[in-house]
Image 1 (tube, rainbow, N blue to C red):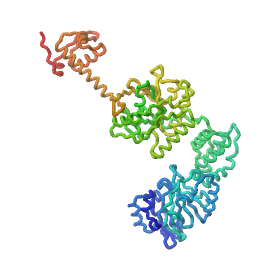
Image 2: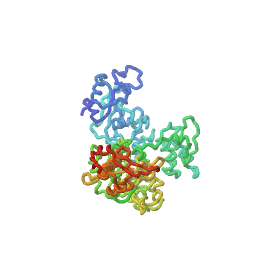
Image 3: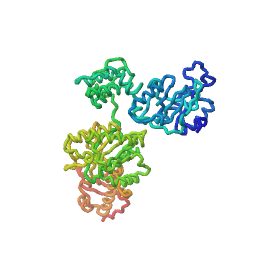
Image 4: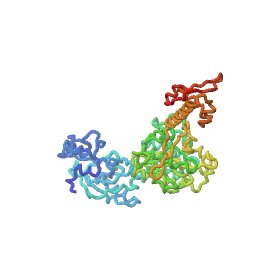
Length: 602
């Protein structure tokens, strides 16, 4: 494709987002200002780069409105590309060549799409990562990085020098931005090496006993000096901390504390606290827990579901996960937000396919798009390296398949399969598992659960009592009921009855409507009432004991039936002074309601 053929429409076909900029005409900027400080480069439309679009109709309208304009490419996330902008006049080629010579990672920037700028410089076009890349002006002497919120002029734009922008190798593939470059770009001016070098006394060794507090004060000072640029502060503090023997986990806490304080009035920072101490007013101002499932499951909760073998624990969990994935009510309770879910099956994964098929058949219109499985992978939640791998896999899968969403629920089935080297009876071992699922919940924002079995005592979960103490929600599946045995910080929910019905080649659990249960009970009483009146039509003088015996009505059931019929006016009940029912007699209203013709009295 020739430069002349590179129209806005051709760029838009690549998914690039464009907007019109002023151009150079007769040696001056088309804005008409002879002293313009950005000739041929500033936007022609309100909102500038924020107005960038790939809509062909809008681009065509702008072209008709601003004939001959330069076109700006919105870099970063909007177009999926970033640009290294090298200015020849400011020594950009020399400083970038020096930077390349000092790189230890492989990769040739000349292997990607390149453009010659109108002033004799160069644009190196790279594929943008998933994480935002900040604009960095004068990142190296004469070298800028154009990322989110930035833009570059495209070929065949005009330049104040009289030159034009042109592609050097149009059609070449665009390579992904190298990881080491992205790290250096995030570090700010000059890359990580120059930031660290500029750390000065902030990098001095810290004597043992004062390491955390000293590092915290350095972080606060650096934060003020670098205008809250966390990437710069993180790099210097982490370098100094590691050199002094401070762990990355401790450094994370120190940085959170440093950036959590308000230093806008120039006040000295409060001393670093390992306990992360907060006043009661601050705690009261913290956001209140929100529920993923109304009244049942808080957001990012740690939970356990236990029950005997064959109690349908895994089916209940599938029903919960699939309901959250689809954003539909679970067992009659609202789901606050739909999102991806993961079901990690350490055992019994061979029939996972027919189970989800059965669930879909039981929920017409639902989909399996957000339901993710890991089948028969017995991951060790007691091993920190394994937990690292779990988090890496979850994040990688999410970025590819659900980039704009976050995990909502993650369930490990069973607990025993995911602590293969642990002892369930030891509280220490479960504490390790609890910290692992807590870490997963914090990293993903998901509610994370464990499916477990009962012990010898069928009313309790197997293993250490530490389990119930440590978790937010504990549920037991027993006799087709979901029972809440622990609900941290809130009232327990009432037992939830469910039924199991066949669908396809498997079964699915279904909610039982409490209203329907009451209606069925009432209907049973009504039918029993009809039987009572039919009996009295033939045996009008029968005693209560005779009636109960002949109709096989239990002593506990009879008062309810009798009182119901009496309240409806279908039965007359004679009572003594103590209110005890002594005799009964059916009424004509009762006979008429049921359509019964009583036997004529002798």
